[in-house]
Length: 322
Image 1 (cartoon, rainbow, N blue to C red):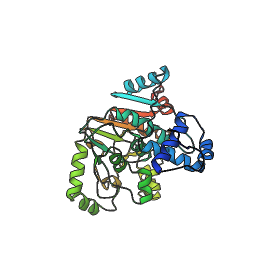
Image 2 (image 1 turned 180 degrees about the vertical axis):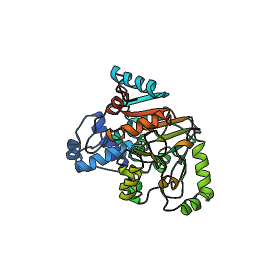
Image 3 (image 1 turned 180 degrees about the horizontal axis):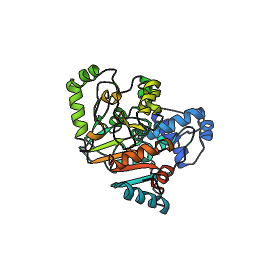
Image 4 (image 1 turned 90 degrees about the vertical axis):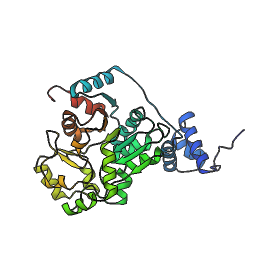
């Protein structure tokens, strides 16, 4: 059947998604050419392409086992005692920052790990959200997703960094939440949250998960600060106490352990030392500002698999970086 794919024939939402995806990925039209052909803005074309990928209409797999990448992966495995490592390109753009690049590649890696009936524990952040929006919806059935830490303060922050609910929606999975913030304002508030049956259930399921998806905050701890969970004063105090980054809401020192600081006692959810019973722990992180804390966490054997970018991988394995 000859469909009228010219200007002015946008049609239903799903048909438009399929049409734009076909023109871009199959026929090779640019976004500007598609916008002109269909009669919509270039920005709208970009958003439709994103939606097509998020809904599983388009799945992109890139597998280029070039020698340099394989060598880097082998060195990472040997250096840090990992089960495996995956290195992706470091190129980013104004629209797709490095964290999202790593997340999209991590989705391909993680989809191969999923099995029917598993429980997946996940942290939060832009990298893990990109993973969640990119993972193959048909990767596994009867999945349960559980958040390992509390939620963010505002709706806008959740939209940028929330991963558990997005991953659960993507996989048609049951989702278990921790009903509280990442950082409480007092020990009493944390105790009250921990006393809730829903909190105890989520923490227990997270600690006994089959797979954990982890990301990490670098020295600037920008995500915690941007979402209002960490004040500038608290940040400076944590940094002065030796914090080089954060993992699962806890501030980590150069030895890879949570530092001795009051803020670490106010975190809702399981901590870095409590995830060791999870057999598969996938660290998805990269970037110059995160090299030191990634290295510290890997030395501590908190992760069994690493997904990172090429420049970060080089920094992690360069001579003298032990």
